[in-house]
Image 1 (cartoon, helix red, strand yellow):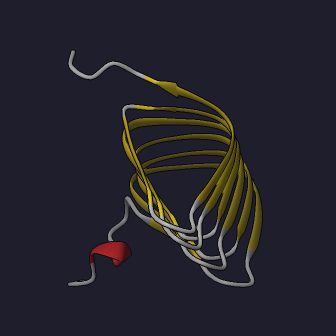
Image 2 (tube, rainbow, N blue to C red):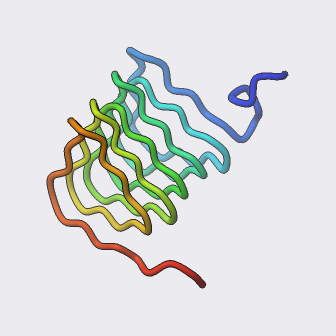
Amino acid sequence: MSDPLLQSNNIVIGEGVTFTGTITAPGKAMINGEVTGNLTAGDLHIGKAGQVSGVIRAKEINVHGKLSKDIVCQQHVMIHSTGLVSGTLEYEEMEILRGGQFHGVMKQKSGGA
């Protein structure tokens, strides 16, 4: 089990897979399919084909696909050139690469304790 994504506290939703419900992944959540509902993860990575919509909570978020609704990121959000984030976003640090998009309301949380 040398692949860190195969550890028991991680989840992978493959391209073409649709999931509706609640996901809690203390480690990494790699989404290449479509997720609708509540998603809580340590690290959330949304691939180019990935779409996530709902109440989202994560420490780190990387978006190559689409992320929408109510999003709270405790640390760092990265919207890549193919990424689209829409809705309400609460974050500590954010980067948007050229081509990346955000539509909605942003609220920066203060760092520290």
